[in-house]
Image (cartoon, rainbow, N blue to C red; front, side):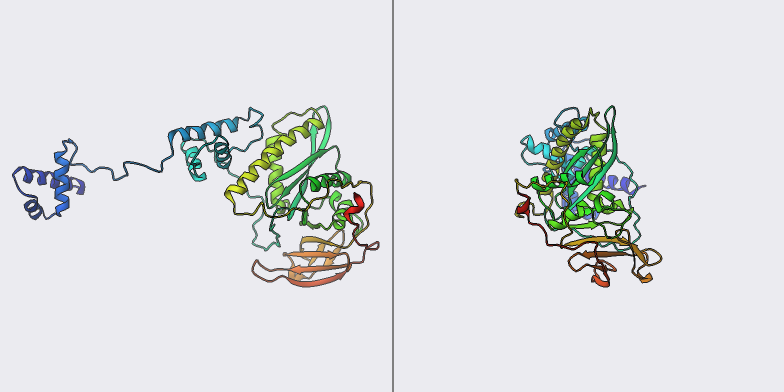
Length: 415
């Protein structure tokens, strides 16, 4: 006989003794069971339940923290509405748990459910699609000298999305920028990939939003200048030097080192470019504004409600509204810093602005951080073996420039 059947037999025997006018104490002594056990089964028998001798679920009979059915229905409705993207307000909206939380707040719901609760509702109703994504980088374990933003507008990442073609119109490029601390972005589209367009975008961006301390870029020619001549600085580099913004060039062929802007570019492609059919450049620019508005509203809500980052107290530095910089102006090389992160090859060398420098085979297959000090006209090479190790200066090279270095031209000169 199984243990379960033995237990049921004992319970029935308890009731037979009870029917024979045995007291609970006598039943307890005869069955060698505890008094609470005896009282429990007598009480169950007296309830009149035909299934009195069977075990009952020990799960709580009430769920005080269970989400209200009306709220669950609203979560499902919002999710389905956001996924459809068939209205002007949802065309470029996010549709995850945070976006649903944001919509519930807009609709005036009290006692907003936690993000994990919203995710459980979506999962329970089959509204989450699991996708497998391949890793974008080689996790080799080699330490990479990353720099992290400490406050809003500390580090921007900027990139070009190109080429793109509008049917019946022609080729366009998009200049995209992300604040790595806030996640907020800005962008504008142009007809061609040119340094003048990038500088024009930056002037507008840093006037309306904020001027960063660092600008992180890949190695596009229109970012750094000549692809042939050594120690040649392009318009963007000169502009940043003059206005005190330090450029950081990431390694060659490692776009994932600019993860924030690459993520934004992917959203730009999937949610805007591949979703809409554009008539011309102006149409794309108008839709881009709507796309940006949704993206930045979401990022702001996410950081304010689900992050401990300080978004309000920091004072942003902007160009004055009267700032008027002509892109045809050729700025001189001024005092400042340019940073270059490079992977040391098997020969112990790195390429910095079209010029090879021997670092040493000791550092082969590691990353170094190079800093060009234009005032001193020197190149400083730093190395850090891991996150906890100190950064050490391992090389100093003379870095004589092709022209004289001047003091920065003040902003007031362009007002």
